Amino acid sequence: MLNNSLVVTRTTDASLSSSEILDYSRIFEIPQVAPEVIAGWIAQAVGLASGHTRRNYQADIVDFEDWRKGRQVTHGLVEGYLQQRGGPGAQHELSPTYRRRILAALRWWIRCIREQVQETQIQSALWPWKYELLSQLDLATQVKGPRGQRKEAARAGRHLIDEEALGLLEVCLRDPDEKHGARDLAMIAVAIAAGPRVHETVGIALVDISEETDADGLAYRINVLGKGDKQGDLLIVGIAAQYLKRWLALRGNEPGGVFCPINRWGRFRKIKGGEALKTMTTEAARLILAERCIQAGITKRTTWHDFRRTLIGNLIRQDIGIAQRTARHANVTMTAKYDRRPDEEAKEALRKELNRLEKSGSHR
Image 1 (tube, rainbow, N blue to C red):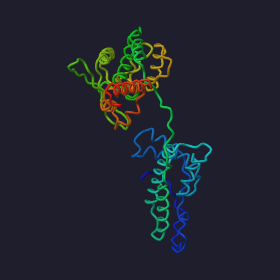
Image 2 (cartoon, rainbow, N blue to C red):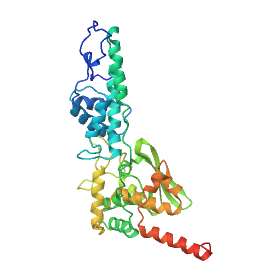
Image 3 (tube, one colour):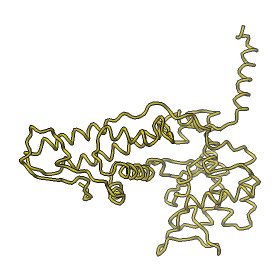
Image 4 (cartoon, helix red, strand yellow):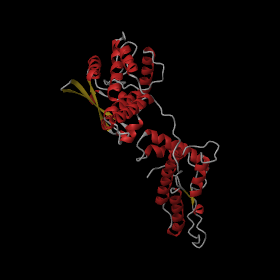
C-alpha cells in the first residue's frame, strides 16, 4: 500500500446507530488531493506502462481533484465532471475518444481511493458506513463512457516520392564533413529501408546490431524496443546495409548509441564519466532531418515517421502481410492506416481493373 493517504477517518465513535441513514461522510472524508501526492501515486503505479499514459492520467486526475474540491466521490459527481469537461453542450466540446480517456484515468484513481478505504482499520460497529462508501465508489467506477467516434480528421504525414528520398541520401553523400555525413546517411538509409519509429532509431545501441550474410550479400539485423516495450527486429539489406557498414567503421567499437551525437570538434560524445557513447535525442534527430530537407530542396513538411508511412505504402503494393510484419503491427487494419499513397495511384489502379474487365468481356 502506498504511503500517501487519500482517505481521512473523521470519527471512531461507535455509538452511531445503525438505524440512521448510512451517511458515510460522517465517518470518512476524501479531501482534495494535492498534485504532488497524485504524482507520487502515479510514479509508484505498476499497471501504467508508458510514460505517455502516466502523464495523461496525472493531468486528468489533477484537474478532477481541483474541480471536486473535497466533495464526496459519487456516480453523479463523475458524470457531472465528464459533462463539464467537454460533453454535449459544453463550451468546448471534446471528442468521445478524448472523454473516454479521461474516464479511464478517473476509474483508475477511484480504485486507488477504494483500496485505501478497504484497508482502513475501523471498529466493527462502523463497518456498515465503510461498506456504504465502498459501494458508492464501485458505482462511481461504473459510469458509462460516451458513445460515438471522433470525426475523421485529416490524416497526418505524407508519402515521400523517390526523388525526395534519393535527394536526402545525395546531400549526405556530398557532405564534406565525413562523420556527420556518414551518420546522417546511415540514419536516413535505415529509415528508408526498415521504417523504424524515431525513438527506435535513436535508441539503437551497438549491442543491438548483428551482421548477417545472405545470398544477395551483406545484411544487418537490428533489435529495437518498440511501442509497449515490445522487442522487434529491423532487417537492413542492399545499399542501406552498405551505408550502415560505412558508418559503423567510422564510429568504431565503443559501446553505447549507434547514432551518437558529434561535437563541434568532430568527437563522439560520451556518457559523462563513462566509456559508452551517448544516445541521440529525438529532438536532435528531428533537427537533423529538417536541415537535410532544406539542403535537398524539400519544402514540404517531412518527419521521420513519413519514411515509415512510405515504406509501408510501398510494401502494401506487393503484400500487405509482409507490410504488417515489417511494420510490426498487431493487425493489418493498423497497417492499412499508414498508407499515404496519393489518390492518383488509386485512380490508376481502378482504371487498370476496369480496362481488364472490359477486355475480358465480363462486363456484358
